[in-house]
Length: 73
Image (tube, rainbow, N blue to C red; front, side, top):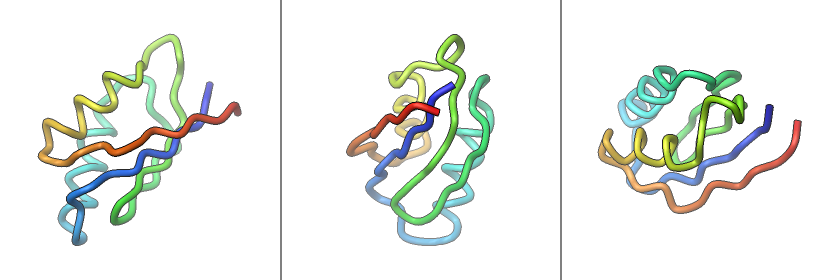
């Protein structure tokens, strides 16, 4: 398990937060998800989730992932 912070461009309101949260909740292996305008913090199971999967999910929802910062634990 690793923690990640995703910096997300294009989010400007509570509706954006709900949209990003909804798509990330559907990714198998994502847990401890917290989303606010411009950022998502989550824990992922490395065996199930890749950075590309996370980026694609958010981008399909209409937002741009500027950066993903990983940390252990």
